[in-house]
Amino acid sequence: MSTMDIAKKYVELCKTHQNQTIIETLFSPDVVSVEAAVPPGGASAEAKGVKAVAEKGKEWMANHEIHSAKVEGPWPHGDKFIVRFSYDVTNKPSGQRFAMEEAGLFTVAGDKIVREEFFYPMG
Amino acid sequence: MSTMDIAKKYVELCKTHQNQTIIETLFSPDVVSVEAAVPPGGASAEAKGVKAVAEKGKEWMANHEIHSAKVEGPWPHGDKFIVRFSYDVTNKPSGQRFAMEEAGLFTVAGDKIVREEFFYPMG
Image (tube, each protein chain N blue to C red):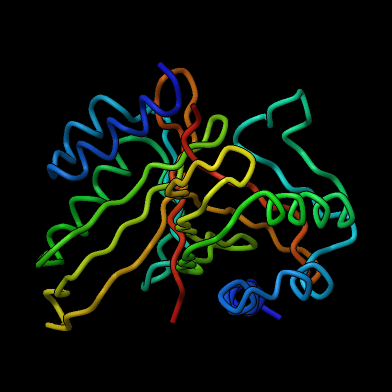
């Protein structure tokens, strides 16, 4: 499969909220997920391995109510592709509602996503 | 300056069509610009050095009439940032009008943009 094939599957599954299928079918067991910002509490900005990445996703979902979500792209280049995410969410612990705008840069190897990097302003 | 400072300047100058100022003030002399697709005629997908990159930009501008342009972002991550471009253009030689959707991934070092990579579907 080409990078664009993987990218299109990723976006399609995102749009239909099939996060579990993304993890099971598109991610390498050794996938690395990197945030732009170091999370509060001194946790690492990097999650390594599909289990840690799945856990990070679940935790985020548990802590946020999603009012609306838009996924745009993908835009490919070689073994990488970019996707844009626009979310309107409420953080459950704080009750704060906010617009989340970010871009994801994904790297593909052996028909699997091996790296995801999230880009967004900090602070 | 932070990556975000450079990124914001870049976007601001893009929005006001100050391409020459971008080249003179934000690009490293050794900037490398990489297209997702190899241009027709066997030219390289990579332009090296600020002169070659400026030339590429001028050539593109000479060959396209821009009806509207939208620049969104920037979204930073470490020493990199992503910008999204949406253009409505007519290619002058062919007369074909089309929507151009792409994302740019920029790398900053020493307060200058040292690499730009353009992401878009091919074919």
